Image 1 (cartoon, rainbow, N blue to C red):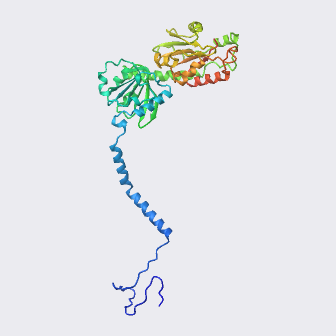
Image 2: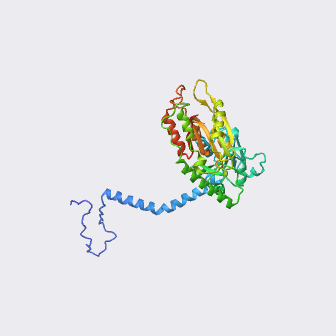
Image 3: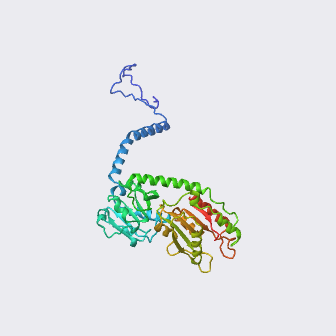
Length: 408
């Protein structure tokens, strides 16, 4: 007889059981189960897989965290990461905060073995000492380094501060236990912050470590805040900028000089609270004497003594421009003046632009800007348009510097 798919021929000798009955163990009957569609199976299998992943995820996370904890980062283990140091030096160089020729000190917890791999700095200008041996390094003179990197501040902060020059840079990982001690120092200012394998902060030393008590510190901070507020208000009252330059030696240029609104008069400040008062004159040697004479005869010194420095520029052959001195102006300012001092300056536009690029403009309180443009010196080869002079004037003022146009 013909058989239907999935069934067998009926055996008349077998008893047919009704509902609730049982099938004999020797039964030849087949149980046919119809499976669902293949698409449904795929959905079910994927759902089961995802459920298993969610269930086991906490276990996987704990395993990963355990393996991460067992291998600490270089910053946490105290090992100096020279690759990170090389990247840091490159970035600080791009920011104009360090130069390859600077004298540098690296304080690390272990014996250095990969210092030769640093390419962003002259390693011949770099000294490396173990932090445990820093206290015995009497050969390290006070304020003798332009750059100091402390990978682990296990040593006394005062020992590190002692060797950094005023104007120099001190860098360290923010995870250091004693980092807060440095960030709280009033003779340091944060100038750089970036995340590498750890977060690195760089601070500029702007003065000697303070020895005053907390009350005098509070008074000085209050004075600085009041001075900055008065200076910001004074910037709004400066004389109007000339939209067209006067002719050289014309009556208009002389009238403009008489209309200058000087910063001490606008602030009503006697200048006696500043540690030093400095006038820096940057220009050609044959012109500097006249500028210094003008300063003594016209600037309101408020009966205070000013130190005067004439920094000579050398004319470039076959050009109307000038070559900077051997040690550029930004470096000179960083090494010789600080933010706690009152600094007046006269300089040419090219010098000022370099100061802004090197972030040294913040050291100047009042600036007399000489911008040799096409109208002012028609016989010169200068290509600077007058609108560029006005743009530079605005950018300097935006930096918080009281700026005046200088017409000689």
